[in-house]
Length: 157
Image (tube, rainbow, N blue to C red; front, side, top):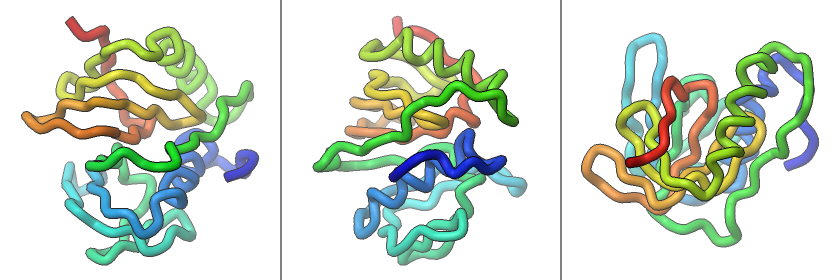
């Protein structure tokens, strides 16, 4: 994981690639949002990551459809995210304000998209790490969420 690649995909796709590269040989679940609607890719082992695609033992997933990755384990070492940058790129007007909001809520309980609750652990470029997550009646140690897919966020009550 290095500097941002300075492409139109800097906002969330390149940062998701950096996270997925850290999860090679790990079994995760993906929640996908694509042109055919929402879907889930459960318990897929990541084999390799290249060309904005993640190759798993269950098939190939394009990054731009991944809204979040579910980890049913505590990663060791912890996942690193790309640092946020100040830029005037394609998504800066949305990305910067969302990043500022999420940073102000770090280490606090939040609800995202009315269905995911957890504690904001870290905020990076295009990515949020949410710990101790509750989603659809199940609990998970960690979610990696693409900021491009966050539609609502509120403090947990």
